[in-house]
Image 1 (cartoon, one colour):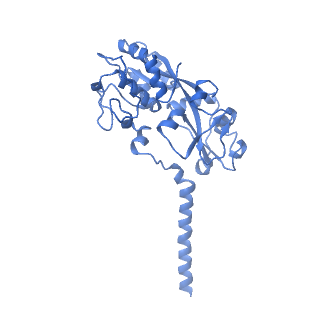
Image 2: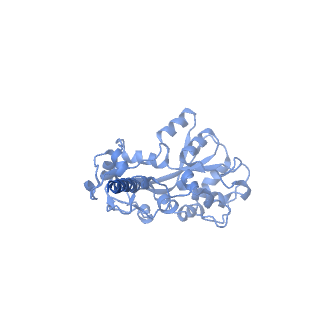
Length: 318
């Protein structure tokens, strides 16, 4: 009888450990498992799915009369804008100008992809000629000044800065003040902004990324704080650009929030009712004498170029 009780006690202890591990997995670990592919994890986008001069590519194909030759500007930019600037190359560059080895663009390719931080450094260092990004961060501007580079920024379209939560979060709409309060720690529980009784996990991005720079601008000098308990067991809120959420990193478990009662639809971005839509830019060194830069910019701002902007999922200048 004593042995039997000991066996039951051991089995009960094992079951308790199993249940504990399952609860930790479901409450904490599962939230941080990235379900995306290796390329998406490392690059923020499946680069190989949006290559120019490829029939099954996900980019917009425009048969343009503008064909660049000679000293071709080397292009780089942000993940959220990569399908668009890949389409610019597809429309105006010769096919042999792009070299992709199956994993990355080679050093001789006129199309590169290093994301926002790498792109800003590359254009300042002179490794690329023109990049497509959101506004630079203060650190990126300081780096350009340190290197004696004047960055020219030409607006070529609009995109919305959006906030995202899990689809099971009952909150669908927040005010600007409420979002800022979630990030400063003024509101620590979702119940304070119309949600359920759960702690807030206010997620941020890496310094120098386009979305983190946009978030710092949105916060307007207010310090963002991180809750340790919120990160472990809370409901998350994050931020990104609309097209990246809807077009590049589609996740059925995530939804975009309305802001001040306005949803970030293409129509609401275009008509100006969504409150935080802003330009994205073609950026280059003002001292760069490559004549093809102005030709490429003329194309991008033409009807054909703006068609690429629109059909790539963004809002054109017009």
